[in-house]
Image: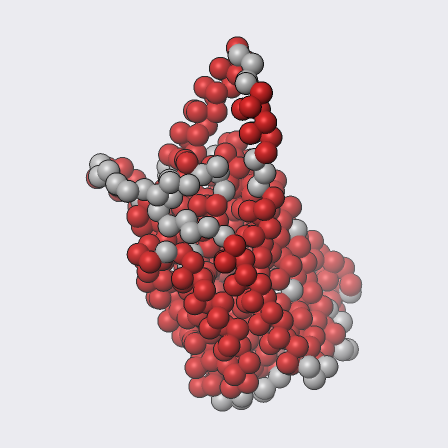
Length: 446
């Protein structure tokens, strides 16, 4: 890999087009993550109306299990849509996946309850979350590739942080909607209609985001590599490659890089979903905190962490990716037990613990887009990210809320904390084995 030593000035018109494309991509990602996070935010209410209410603990575990199943199909979506994105372009996939998420969101808001149709309510909810998970896997893969490819090389960490800003932004929006609904409505209304509102709202806002995405420019990096591949194919059709060249190509395998990215992401995604998708449920169900207070405290903590993301990205542009990733892994491994132990039924405890944890998570989250894109070659970037990132998030992130609640329900909270710590150590080892990629020429990655 060669480091970019000189950055040629870009025409202002192209700069404006890139910024518009960045804004359109981010707006769509925020909406998709909002629709995805709304399910976790309203999990305590969904559990009561979409599953058998006779056993509340089992119903909540079933709700979180459906949340996890949505993640299981993400790798498949990442592979399928990643293959499409590497052939037809990033923009095409970003539009397709957003439409799929929006349609499924509307249908979730229209589902009959367990009381009305019995177990079929649970089955239909599961199927729609599978559709969303499939689309979400493709969205994440394409977005991570697209943003990194349109970013200036010396600002790739800062620009890449917007992918995680969208994740936090969607979660903040979901928790804000949750806070407004639970503050202004009785629990009976939330159980009957209130939990449906976020899904309908997300579908309406998706129309605006879709309009913005239709005006996005395709990644110039993708288009350049596509042209090069067409030229190379024309040459190859007329000449036989040298044996040494053929052998060198055969030796190129992304398996090692994929495994290292899976390991690197494992601690980040586990900590992220523990401190965004689960911690409010823990505060409400296990510590007896008021639901409205828990939602708003979580919103504040996530906004603070969101504001720090571009700073983490910019910091990595200056000192390198690995030192920032080391900071996350070590700080999270040391802080998980005391931070989770701080939470009681008092909202301020959730605020302090969540704010500290999410600031740490943000250090690594801000860098995922740039690091993954700098590791994989352009022609295979989206499909490899789709496989590695989605698989890691599915296994280690999607199941984090379920495992947390399972361990807590049997009085073994220490196990849920230990799970986070162990995966942060795995992340630390993976970062050690990965190369430093700051400023690399994406077209030179092999």
